[in-house]
Length: 150
Image (cartoon, rainbow, N blue to C red):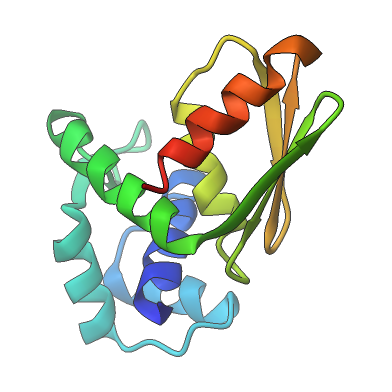
């Protein structure tokens, strides 16, 4: 489970920052509370299929390749399954409880699903709040999210 949480955090970090080296990525993970070595980060990069892409500033950064987005979506789905503890709803809100430190990364999958009924997600450390436009659709969306756990 520690590997899953770390890899979810790694994806979150590279999606929010321009990380150029494995050591910089290891340092970013350490700041998030993960005790990692460069070798661990190297294995995670390989597991996740990350590549380096050129930025507008002519530097390189780690990214998820578009060509393997379907493969990475499968990996993200597995990470979602391993990190989500429960899904419940009330009113216009769905609450997803996750393993500590996994909510932001798990919320990325919810965002990538692009459900038209979802207005947006807010994630904390271990909780995701999903806002649904039409209250009559909330049970169906919660069921779709729960089905991802099977």
